[in-house]
Amino acid sequence: MLHSKPLSGDDSSGFEFVQETLKGDPTCAINFDRLQFHPVQGYIIFEFLLCEESQSVTPYTSHPNRYWHKNSQKFIALFKAAQALNAKLYLVNYARKGTRHENEVLIIEVFAVTKEGITTEKTYKTDRLKFSEWFRKLNKECCEATE
Image (cartoon, rainbow, N blue to C red):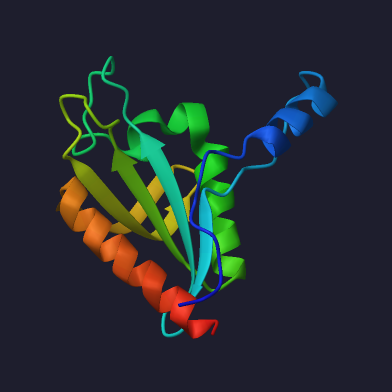
């Protein structure tokens, strides 16, 4: 397999630096959670959407259109980036491990977005283990493509 290191810890220093530098100014930028290149599918963008236990929604019932008025620019920008890269865009709803809904994972493959919301999509309800198996397989295929 590719000579690359496994993930260890989070890298929030860049985010913190930009936050400090902007000094509270609003931003038009978004952070990608994950961008990878697949040998067959091309670029793939993943955005992971955490459902907190205190929320009234679960990973299976939450959807960006429910809170579009609060965060539309993020999803519009993600979709525009996906179009520019000719990439697939996956939004992945999940809950923290050890919480009541930890085994609910919803994958939303986004095909069309307007200023009013996501208009065309395909959703896949899965669990944490099946998502991990699929995600690891996809990751391995991406790594093998760069060897």
